[in-house]
Structures are given as C-alpha cells and as structure tokens.
Amino acid sequence: MVADPSVKPSPTIRTELPSRPAGPSGDGEDRRGPAAPATPEPGAMHAAPAPQIRLRTHAFDLFYGAHQALKAVTLEVPSHSVTAIIGPSGCGKSTLLRAFNRMNDLIPGVRVGGRVELSGNDVYAPATDVVELRRRVGMVFQRPNPFPKSIFDNVAFGLRLLGVRDRGELEARVEQSLRRAALWDEVRDRLGRSALALSGGQQQRLCIARALAVEPEVLLMDEPASALDPTATARIEELALELKARYTILVVTHNMQQAARISDLTAFMLQGELIEVGETRALFTRPRQKLTEDYITGRFG
Amino acid sequence: MSTALTAGAAASPMRPATARRRLSRLADQVHQRALGATALLVFLAVGLIVFEVVRGSAPALGTLGWRFLIGTEWDPVADHYGALPYLFGTLVSSALAMVMAVPLGVGTAVYLAELAPPRVGAVVAFVVELLASIPSIVYGIWGLFVLAPFLRSLVEPWLIAHLGFLPLFQGFPFGIGMLNAGIVLAVMVVPTIVSLAREILLAMPGSLREAALALGATRAEGLGVLLDAARPGILGAAILALGRALGETMAVTMVIGNTNRISASLLAPGSTMASVIANEFTEATGQLYLSALTEIALVLFALTVVINALARLLVLWTTGGRRDVAGSA
Image (tube, rainbow over all chains, first blue to last red; front, side, top):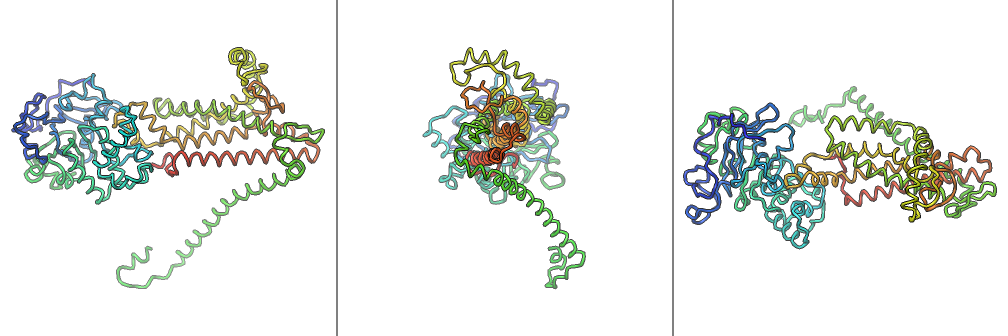
C-alpha cells in the first residue's frame, strides 16, 4: 500500500472540486457541493466551523491484483450531508466506499495509491489504527447482516468491543441508537429476542443502529435498500435524511431515483473513474458530461 | 394451474385433464407413496430393535429389577448381575474422550476453515476424514501395542508422580485402562468433529465477519462472532461424536482392561457396556445370563436416546429456539 507517484490524475476529474490542504480554513464558498446546506447552521459561513470536508480522496488508485478498480479518484464529501455514488455494476462505487473504512484490506492482493482522508487524517498511513478507523467510519451493507444474537446484543456489540461494561450505560446507548435508527418503538419490549426474528427492513435499521452505537463520524451505506421492499426502502431513505444532521453519509446506490431523493451531492462513476460530481439536482438536470447524461437518461447501465 | 392461465381471461370452462396428465398425476402418487414407505422402514427398524431387545431382556428385567442398574456384582456363576460398573465405564470413557476431542477438533476446524490457506485447509481436511475411515480394530491394535507401552512407561508414571495426590491419577501404571480407552476414543471421534465443524464454519455467511470487522472488531473478535453463530452446529457435531464414543465396541474392548470395577482412577482398568457384551455374549450359557447381557444393550440404547434428547434440548436452549442453525443463511 504505497502511493504510486507515476499515476497521473485522470483527465475526467472535474476541476470544480480541487483538492485543498486539510484544515479548518473555512474555505467552503467556492464549492458547488454544499452550496445549499440542508442542515441549517446559523452563521456557519462566518464562524469558521470544524472542517467542512469529512472525507476526501485525492488521485486514489486501487488495484485488485493486475486489475485497476479505481483510477485516480478525487472526491470530497462534505460534513453533515448525504452524498450518493451512482454508476453501473462493476464501476467501482462499492470499492470506493470500502476504501474509506479499509474493508478492502480483507481482499488478498489489493494495492492502493494516492490518498484517502478522514477529517484530514491519512486513512492509509502506516500508523493508522484500522480498528479505530472503523469505529469512526460506520458501515451498513447491502443485505441486512445482524448477528444471530438478541436485538440488544447486536446494538451493544460495538460498545462492548470498546470496553463498555456498565449495564446502565449499555442500555442507555442501545436505546439512543435504536431511537436514532427509528426502530425503538417497534422493538422496545423485545430487546432480548433474536434479531433474526425481525423483518428485513427492521434488520437493516437494526444494522444502522448497531453502526450508530459507537458514535461514528461517517456512515457508509452500500446499497442499503436494494434487498428491501418499497415501504422498508422509504423508511431507510427517511432515516438517511434524518441522520445527516448528526453524521456524514455516503451512500452507494443502483437506484438513481433514490440518489435524487436523498442526496445533496451525487457522484457518477464509470469503469473505475469518477466522471462527474456535483449538487444532486444539477447533476440530474444539467449534467456537464456526455457520459453522465447518457447514464441518467438510461442509454446504458 | 396452467390450464387456467392458458384459457385466457374469458370464463371458459376448464379443459378436461388429458390422459397424459392423468398418467403423470398417477406417477406422482406412486412416487410419493414409495418414498413414504421407505421412510416408514426407518421407524419399523427402530421399533423392531426395541421390541426384540426388550423381549430378550424381559427375564432379567423381571428377576433383577432395579438391582441390575445399581448392583456392582457381576457373577454369572451365581446368576448375580449388577451392571453399574459397565454403565460407569461407558460414561467415563466417553466423557474423557469428549474432554480431549472437542477442544482439539473444534480448534482444528477453526484453523482449517478460517486461518489456513484454502489449499492447506482442503488437504488437511481430507486427511482428517481419512482418519474416520480406519476400521476400529486398527485403532484397538494401535492402542494396545503403541499407546499402552507409551502410557505405561512414560505418561502414567509421570501422572502418578506429579498428580498422584488426585484420586484421578492414583494406582498402578497398567498402560491399558480408562485413560487408554479415552484417548483411543478421542482419536476416533476427532475426525467427526473436525469435518462437521469445518463444514459448519465454512457455511457461515461472510457477511457476519464483515459486520464485526466494520464495527472495529479485531480478527480474533470477528472469529468469536463466527464461532458464536456456529455454536448450535458445533454442538451438534460434538453430539454425533459422543454417540459414536458411547457405542464404540472393538477398540475399547481391546484397551480398557475388562474388569468390572468402579475406580476413581483413570489409570485403572474397567469395562464399558459395549465391551462386556462383546466379551461375554458368545459364552453366555444361562438364560438369565443372556438376558442380562441383552438388558445391557437395552440400557445402552436408552442411554444414547436420552443423551441425544438432552443434547437437542441443549441446542434449543442455547439458541433460544432459533431455527437458523448453521448454513441456512
């Protein structure tokens, strides 16, 4: 995992999102992204708040053996927003998502080059504690994957890994997480029951609660609703909109309507390259790239 | 039904079944009945075994009553039959085998399924399964000619010298006895545990491990989640192994020493229910003698049924009635 200096930035990277030095410099004015922040923060523009860019990649490459899955991807994800990554199957959107919490490390033969940052910290630096990184960057998977344990133990899992043993604290944080995941009212009187007895949509919200319990900064969602029915999908989408007040959400989706409904920013990927990223409505109504237009109008993918 | 579908939306009458369709329905029924009959054969076989064993042990049941189970005297000359030493021997040798085989087997399975390179895992698993196909008499010969001298000259003197203060390790280093039988049984059942537990671990969905790791679990903690999820299946593997250990006859008979004593020491010789039947059945002359041996078979049969039932309850209890035993995901 050594940065490969020979890789040149892809010409398709938009210059509207130049990479800038990390730091709370409050230089958010020229970005197209969160131009209209959905979370009103009074005086945020002048108060020079915490870093606006939560996740950043710069000329990021990823190889599975000889195959290059990501090609010089440069992307910035602002705090407290929902950013969607769309693109056809195999375009590398899930791979990109998994770069932020280094879940790709599990696959043998993966090499990376370039830079990935979480709040300005180099994710792939040798000194990075992957366990700590994954606590700060929560993840929800395509298929609900609760542990075959009780509902309570599922949510408490990450807390226990962190060494929380106090029953009262566990109970308080489990309840808080379930409330944030909009599941508390449905399960409050059966926390001891198996998580596998829940419906698919409930299981997915349980997985979200489980990820939220350890207070991550970022929530990665890898097609979180693709295995769910329309009603459950709607609940997950509502939830994403609620959660962006507290967390930064990056969601991979196959579903362009979903991206349009829930995201502030949308990034379009094709064959490992980031073709275009911009404010969601603008990207869907006035795409700047021919490839993006072809994709969103259904000409391929 | 396809007829309804092809008939279209109009309320046309159902077409009469063609001869071909009637024939296929008949074939279905014949097929179903035939398979049902083969399944019934299983019940029939178990029922007949129970019937025959109960009938054969009826004289002993009538004459000896409860004394059979609690008596320690086994004297065919005086027609005096107490089977407690054999019951004890079966339970102790099997328990000893499980104490050794379960950690070894589960540990091997975890290594093969999770940690070893896939090719190594497959090769080692194949070799482990070969172990299961060795006839039990070969294990008996190994226990008698290889394990026994080793135990007699090295292991047992050491145990007596260092752990001799425990009743478990007092006595004389015979080489053959409960310890030898337990070890041989453990070697015999380890393959069962390894191959089943490995299959169960391999069938666990990778998404569980991913979920744990994504929450900041270390590799070991992720493995803990997998093992936890696989626990009902692994328990099932251990139960199958226990069933094999309880009933194993030939190897045990060769290495256990065949005395009808109850001793707290693992070094002392003993007997199991299966071994006493194997040893004495051919020489059982008196009617009560034969009947007493048959009753031992009945007790052994009942014991395996009870243990299997308890084990099932245990699985049910540890999973909280969950029905998703390994592999269903």
